[in-house]
Image 1 (tube, rainbow, N blue to C red):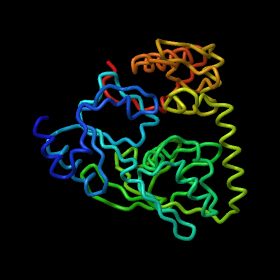
Image 2: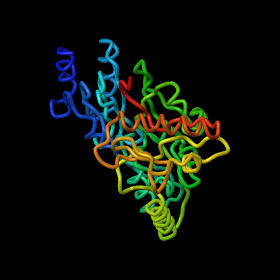
Image 3: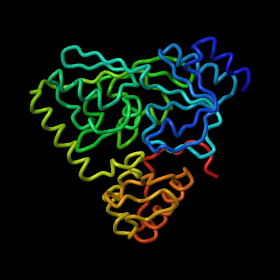
Image 4: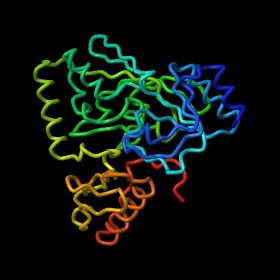
Length: 303
């Protein structure tokens, strides 16, 4: 990959090209070995050019935001990580619509909506992710989902073609979308909200924030909810009923506060987390014949 660096230098400055960058610095789990290249583009054109370089050279690539919902292997990632985060996080509001770049955080978006007296994004205030990831997985919480507010998105296809998709083209379902299934890269999105009262919106956000603090293990690094909700069940209750509350492997633990979370309680490796996830899946299946699907994305070599 020696010549790859010089190709990237032609499209972006050295300060945004990191080599052998520890992914533990860029995930909410605080876990992950080094990525061969870690790039921070600041425009859709740079993203497109990076993908073109990777495709032409047969180099794997993966897009991250702030690294939530992600577990990176202890061996790192043999390829290029493209971080769409603070360098691409612009937000603008016109009447009832918010247009934002993919790197905007959901927390910031929900606050901007509140300041503009727009309701509909209150549910997103505590989700520790960026808009791009939220669109891809149709993120949701407390009865709200991205599908409720999305109007259109702009994406790059794996071949590098930019296109705009309307809400009815997004195939939004439980933790999935056409973005995820076709491996599109989200560049920006437009959300349509409704007029509301700032004080009432603030009160709802405060209430949801209090619920999160009281019910979720926010004091520990994690990737959020570890497993998807099985149809007809709640993952956390199944795990608790299986007797796995507090179950630990190395530095990874099933949270005692909320069994739907696997946390890094100190020095956990990716192998610890992955091993504990597998144990939880096996026990829940053995006891209840319910298959738990990971909500957390595993990236890299876990063999």
